[in-house]
Length: 215
Image 1 (cartoon, rainbow, N blue to C red):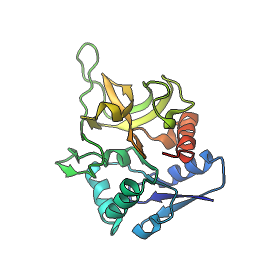
Image 2 (cartoon, one colour):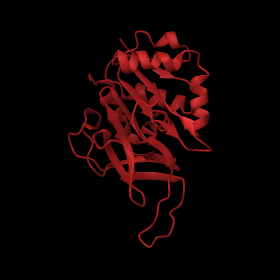
Image 3 (cartoon, rainbow, N blue to C red):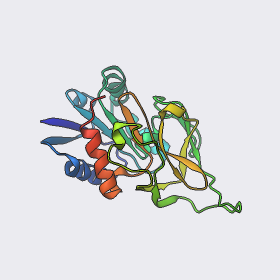
């Protein structure tokens, strides 16, 4: 039976992520809520959710003794498939600029900065970006997007977004006053700015793709 480690950094949305993972599974699977670094041993996949402020989510992760170094060992060195959701993706950046500068895990280049979306006439668009937005990507770019079509919609809630991504690691964007990074990834790592667990059938298909992914 496959085991998925769902990290609990104290930032909310765990129950909905867990339910979505269980619904997306097409084979027997165990989702384990994890607050201890040792619990990552033997996990077939790791999911890091997050919502709220970058600094608070980083503090919650740091409060789990040994978790940051264990993630480095299992994800970056051993290649365990990893999914970051919303702020769980943002934490992979070099830094976050919400309420000051907070170091990220620096697994992917770039930073998370305040959005400044504008309408075609230059008027500011409302923040947070909240609601269902279409995804723009090249079909076949990544197994995570198998069965998803450009234009399919996902559910976003955020006022900060990734800047400075490597083009090869930017898997999908959405449009909100211009292109906004929506999915990033490399090697065995993938992450969504949107709440994949709240994105209906599109999100469930992505989670199923993740659970069946062999990087």
